[in-house]
Length: 244
Image (cartoon, rainbow, N blue to C red):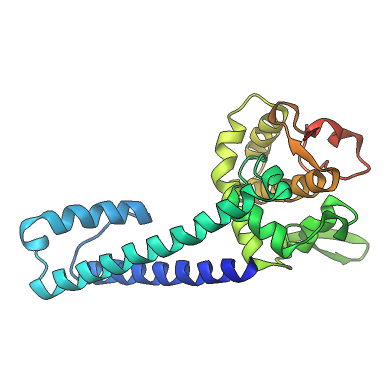
C-alpha cells in the first residue's frame, strides 16, 4: 500500500511540473490564467477553442495541445490508483471507520493504515500526533518555555495530506452546529487560519487513534467539545464514537 502511495505521489509530482510548465509557456506570451488546476484546465479548453489560440503561434498551439494530452493521461493514471485505494478501504474494517471522520477519505485512510500500523503502537493520541510532527516545538531557557512552529517530524506525506484535508474540511465543520463545529469556529476566531488548520489536523490524527484503539466509529453529533481532548484517559472523549 505504501508503494502504491509513493507511485501515486510521483505521478502527482509529474502533473504539477507539467502544469507549472504550461503556465510558464503561456505567461511568456502574455497569456495569464487564474490560479487553480481546474481553472487552468477550463481556461485551456476555451483558449484552444478560439481561432488562432489568442495570438499563439501554430507551433505553440501544438505544444500546449500535447501538454494537455499528457495531463489527461496523468489524470487517468492517478484515477486508477484512487480507485484501488477505494477498493482497499471498502474491504478493510479499520479504514472504513477512519472515513467516518470529517475530512478523512480513502486516500488518507489507506495511508494511515499502511504507514502507522495498529493503534497499540502509541500509548496516547497525542503521541501519534507528535509522531506525525503536528505538535509545536518547545524552546526553554531561564525557566521560560516558548512554543515554536510544528516539529514536522515523522511521515512527511501523511502530515501533508492531513493538513490539506483539514484545510478543505475546516470551513464545513466550523459551519455546523455541533460541539466539534463550535470548537473549530472558536479556534478560527482566536488564531490565524493556518494555525487553526494545523490544530484541526492534530485533532483528526488523535481522533483516528482513538477510533482505531476502541474499534468504534465517529459520530458527528456527539463530537468532543474542544480540540485536543482525545486521549484514552480523558473522560471528555468517551461520547465521541459509537460502536460499530
